[in-house]
Image 1 (cartoon, one colour):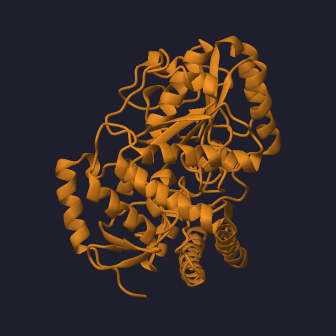
Image 2 (cartoon, helix red, strand yellow):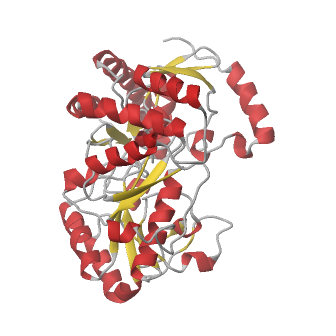
Length: 440
């Protein structure tokens, strides 16, 4: 094992903390959940990232999902070079943004009309706004552990009961902003039925991650899926599937096609930009026609549909459509997940690996994780040990128990073998620490 040196990253982090809150531009990057400091990236190549100290890691973060083709894929680089040769931004329509919208709609028949925006947060907040405009109702139902961006009314934690009002989950969010958000347990169809029985004529929409990635990978149970299909519809509310993470990641048609759910609105991001900033939301024409300039629901963005993000997104989707890599991605992800599970069984380490498509999470838990409370019960100390041991052995995983890992086309069989070898060594360290803890 090559010794990892981080002298330059340590100095860069100290500089960053003087001018950027926490030294990072998104909180999880600070590594507070696992301890230690982040390394600063110099470049990426295929399945690997290289830090400014010269260390190489297998990248299982992949920019938290967008890089399904791997770092610096040749199709993306060609598209980027061509687009930049024409100009960076215009503030006016381009044919390419129409083509991207058509491509997304072709893959997702529930979407008849679509608006491009700049991020997943913009997509979800805009979808909720148009849902409220369409229904004339104020309330939104969300689920604990599902993250839909940092709009004020979505940073809300659950109340003490299934149908109690939530409270702000972030400083700077007034209580009044949270009063119309109802937060329920994920995978709990009875709670969904109860909240609609109490507030049904006030609820505009239900928003949900169909396969959750933001508390780690958590899959919906069939009874919960059926409740999502039927209960909002029965009460005249809209169903919004947040596929910012799962869209074009778990299948060409996304999670809705695997679960056989037909949503009223969908949100996209990540892969549709191929690694550049982008978002999109869309749905039935009768709903989307309420958006300005056709209707009274206002939403705008100077850089929406910018030609750079659009070009790389189109290149990414073209590769996915033509090559159909999903069976290979799923097989490699399953091999990694099954391999880690087998190692944990052999060592007697309580551990559950949950995966879908090319997403997976290693939960240090004695039981399957079905909701946010289950996720919170995991052994985060064991995960922290696992994280640092994987990093020492040349594999970068997300620095939080509650994030998904992602594979790409560049993660070939040799890379998977490297990851399994690193996992074996990492789990040996976890086992040694757990045994020492028991002795103490």
